[in-house]
Length: 307
Ligand code: GRG
Image (cartoon, rainbow, N blue to C red; front, top):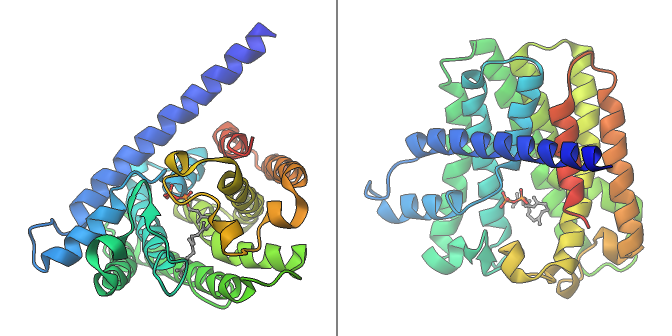
């Protein structure tokens, strides 16, 4: 028993070390890529840095780099794509917080971009992060031109429409206040809004590795369950954790009558669904003839936040 506990603790510590290493590596790249705060237009660059360096978990870079590590890819080849995906994620948070969308005042433990810099600058900060993301991949000298084009196409599709993040956001906004939404509708919203970027993060690690189609499909299936797990956990945290822990306004989903897993199923059933998603993610990995312990640990970590 003690051994199992010790093993669990050491696994958690290993993942903790991996994640903080990923975060500091990707932050170093972001630091180089984003114009400094004293470069004109200073307000725009200050706004970008305000949101980007506010202490996000860097979960998507960690997923990409973990897949890369499973396939023995040198870290250097993974960094710029990881940074690009984090830029797109941060742009989506800035825009999601705008008065026209979720109208939030707190994100990553600090004032949202539009509260601090004004609405117009917040929109432009998001716009800039989006195009800088694609420029970052286009200019990545560590990757072949074919690979860069593939990554740009896949990430553009995952962050756009009809099956990407923007489509999911539109569906989510339209579902607000709809008390008749089904679990199937909810899953479609989240597969696009949250899942697509998590999925492309994982598959990008495999693309960069030069993995075969079958391996990429397995990674995609793992990530599909991981995305669902991530969203259920995020929904659960919204109702179980205070604002001070979340770094964003707690209980927002309820007050905005958002379609969420706890709202639709209750907390216990939502937790059961999270466990099923965790298990399914790990089961998919058994089809890969590689040491996938890091990817299993990521699923365990996301799941552990749900209770
Ligand atoms: C505006 C096009 C557009 C899309 C917005 C990301 C998003 C889509 C909305 C954010 C709202 C939300 C709570 C989504 C659920 C899951 C999610 C993306 C949570 C935030 O991601 P974390 O937990 O955040 O990785 P950090 O700050 O750690 O990076």
